[in-house]
Length: 294
Figure (cartoon, rainbow, N blue to C red):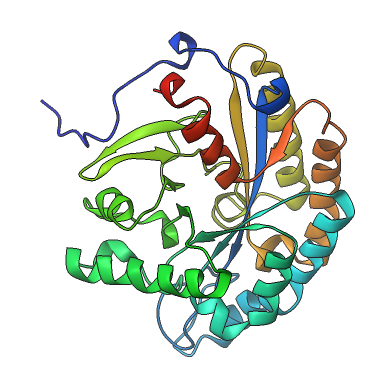
């Protein structure tokens, strides 16, 4: 018998209860914008080019471009297209770039917990230390925003065996860590249920551009093709499409131009889809369709 995670049971998407999103919409679309800060001269971080000995100036500065320039350009584009965002934020961002956090919060965007920094993985920690990390990051977001975050995405999508239990114990209502479905799924924890909201690993600029070396036009076409296909599929089942973005990647001018093309295509269909946040999806699941989710 294979070891099982015990968090959810197998359920084919074609045999689930039917429901709709608000106003009868069938496809919910949200943007997950990752705002991340990194330690200088140590720790983890995506690389534009193979890093040399620390301090790795090239890759540190390339990532910092996202906070200084790229994220501001994305904010301008979201305003122009009237698109909300789920801002997935390291708690270190509040100390490093408070103006940036305020700018997104002032738009009414959701702030999602994303650990302390993407220089570390919480899966490397024991249970006590991981609980302390979640608590510390949550406290920073709550103090800054006035309310605690509802959702969590672990840095590097790294979980321990305890992570869902610790999130539920800390008051989180949903996680973005699991990419196993196109619908929200209830997960079992030691402190009750936790909702898994789909977060993409395919329509995600890091796996696409950094790992697979896809060109930016290819990434934009992937977003458009994924959207068009899911819009057709959603006639049969209600679906969630997330778009995962990092400002140091898609905030680069030549990539921004192609991303604008893709997001403009989605925005032109706003009468057919629910343009929303991951938190609003979670709220709707808890409050309106709780018994229909498997």
